[in-house]
Structures are given as structure tokens and as C-alpha cells.
Figure 1 (cartoon, chains in turn green, yellow):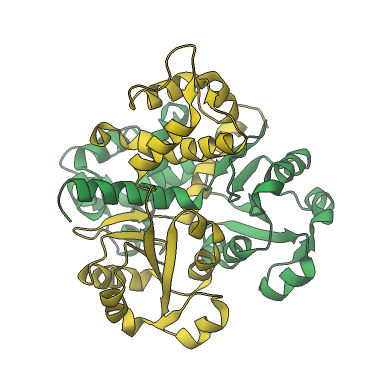
Figure 2 (cartoon, helix red, strand yellow):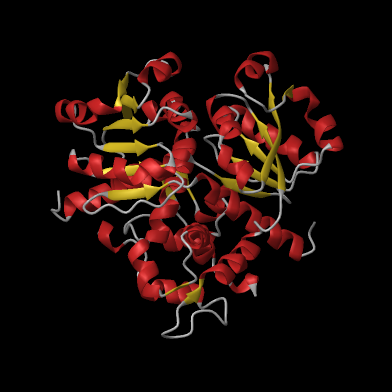
Length: 212
Length: 212
């Protein structure tokens, strides 16, 4: 079934997941598409269309079962299990990610941080081991990593991706300001400025509409 | 014209923009959809469909004019001008963003960082002024901010958004792990873990396909 879900729906699933987590915490057991729409920035019809992909949920007039839908989405997203994560690059982004407590609580365990200057990095990286990048292959050989985060300068990104792929890493989350394409590896290019661009585009729309 | 461009295309425009910047730097003046496709993770037909929105570009057999297309996309995205940015919250994420040199080079000027503990933050925030959050309205009154970054804990996010809206901020880039919806303000919810979820979904697809 999962293979029939469009990329656009997949992109929205984390948003549904977070909203359902919040509702579950509040003790809500069922919710209608109208109420979900009021909580999120999505129309009720879009919500129904998105969630209809997962047959059996959301009978008319009855609403969605919060816990079951949340569990189902977690399963589709592959977040019903744990992942070990290595971070390459202990600069500002690498350090901020290694400190981001939420990753731990959501099942992503950061096992090591690598840098060309581990001495410098060790002072700042909190509880995570910082190793010299030369030890990357040795470490991953002994501690397989599900996901690698690339947080190195642009010029070093492609080479880092190649080393990770050769070491057997199958998923890369790339924060370097350059697109990475690596055969046999799923890559998510987390371009920080993309969010800003989407924002300035919508700010422009708001201006053109005369609202501001 | 911009208003007819779909959200999905808008989401891909930053990727085209970055690729066109790289090509321009390499001195490439024209590029075909086939060559762009080989450089990016997008099919040639998707590229043609996306870029056809901007009539007049990409005549068949002639390719896209790199500089003109880049300029046109920058204009659509609203990045052909400068923006002043304030960051609320000087924790790991707020600090990492304030250090992210790329923002400066792309026209986003960070004018101030706010925290409930500016003394602590000031030690770590490099060149950016750190002010107590109590001075938010005063500062924005004197130095209008185009964009505010919210990097506060989840429980403080909604209240921060309200204060920013009341102070006249029209665009919020939210890094707090909670969805923000604020009337009259464009909000981009930059959920860091969404990228990870998209990655684990695709890793699951790779597993199910038997490729790994």
C-alpha cells in the first residue's frame, strides 16, 4: 500500500503525525477532518483526501481514531523503530543537531560526531563522542549507522557522501549547502535556506494581495 | 503570473535556484532539461513541466538560459531583495542559525537575537546582539523586522508568535517543535525531524524493494 502514496502526501505525513501526537497527549480519542483542519494549515477536503489513502480510517460523521491513525502513520514513515545516526562535521549545524534532545526522544540515537578537528569539537559537543574523521570507516564497521548527517562545508560534501556509501550507510541527511546525489543511498537534502525562500515567496504573495 | 504557480513547484524552486547558481559560477550559460535532470534528483519531464510555468524559457533543442532563469526564479521567490531577521531563542538552534554565515551572503541580515537569559546567550552568540526578550517590541518598533525566527521551547512558541504579530512581523520561520498558525502572518514550520521522517520513509521503501 505504502508504494501508492504520493510524495506530496508523504511530505505532509510528519505534520499529521505531530498533530496526532499532540491530540493523543491531550487525551483526544477521535477527531473530525473539520477539527483537524482548524488545528492545521490544511483544508478539511485535503485532509480527507490525504488520509483516505489509509483505508478503513475516518468513516463519515465518526472522525479519525487518533491513536490508531498515529500508529499507522508512524509505521508508514518507518518511525516505529530505532535508528542509529552519525553526524559528520562538528561546526554550528552539526553541534546544534547533536544537542537537539528531541531526536533522542523520537528514536534517533546519535552514536558519534566526526570532525577533522576532534579536539576542538570535543570541547563543545556535550555528551556525544567526537572522533577524528579518519576513524569513520572503522567506527561504522563496528557500529553500523542507519543514517548519516552531513554537516561539512560544501566542498567536502560529495567526498563525505562517497565515503559513507562505501562504508555501507544507506541514508544521508545532508545539511551542506550543495545538492548530494549518491547511487544506492537515499538522500534528503535539508537545505536550511529553502524554508526561508518559501517564506519570502509567501511574504511576496501577501504583499501583492495588498494584505500588507 | 506567480499566483498560478502550484505549491509543489514553489517547493522545488529553491533547488533549481541553487543548481542554477552553481552552473552560473561554473560559467555555464545554457543547459538542457536532460542535463539538469542528471545533476538533480528530478526527471527531465518534471523539470520541463516545472519551468514551463515561466513562459519564454527553454525552447526545444536550445536549453534554458542559466542567468536569466536564475534571475527570474530569484524574483519569484522574493530573494532579489534584502530581509532583516530577528531570532527569538538563543538555545542550540537559535545560536546555530545566528552563526550560519550563508544567511548573510544570501541577503538575510540577522539584526538581533532575543532570549529570556541574554547574559548567558551573549557569551555564545558571536557577533549578533543578544537582547532580553522584554525588549522585543521596543527593538522591532525601532528596527522593523521582515522575518522572525522562533527557536524557543514548544510551550513558549504560540505566545512568541502572538507577540511578534502584535509587533508587526509578517513572516515567521518556526523551529519550535509545534505547529504555529497565526492570523495575518505567513508561517513556515521548519520541523527538523520532518526531514528525518522523509528519509526513514524512503529507507523503508529501499528495504521493501529488496535493494538493501
